[in-house]
Image (cartoon, rainbow, N blue to C red; front, side, top):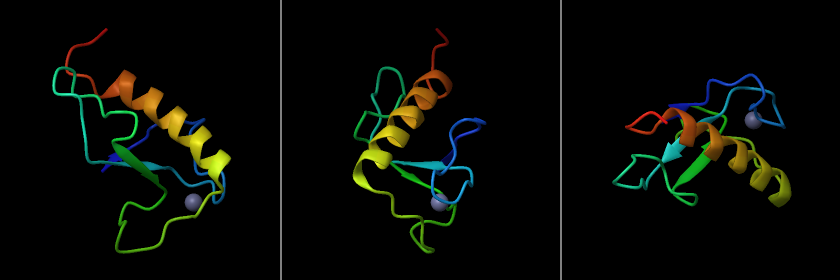
Length: 78
Ligand SMILES: [Zn+2]
């Protein structure tokens, strides 16, 4: 679970920080694939509930999380 340390990427529903629950990464770069993570606002997921967002809100949030992950989790700095 990776905490997204960004002031403009928070859960649109509850306003809490969000976390990426990563299950697939690109082996070359260590960046999660675009469909390789879930965005949750609970660091104890799946044992506790996280907010359920509507589809378009979830897509927007996933995009921001993906960009953050791409900048912050790659093995080799840009
Ligand atoms: Zn939330």
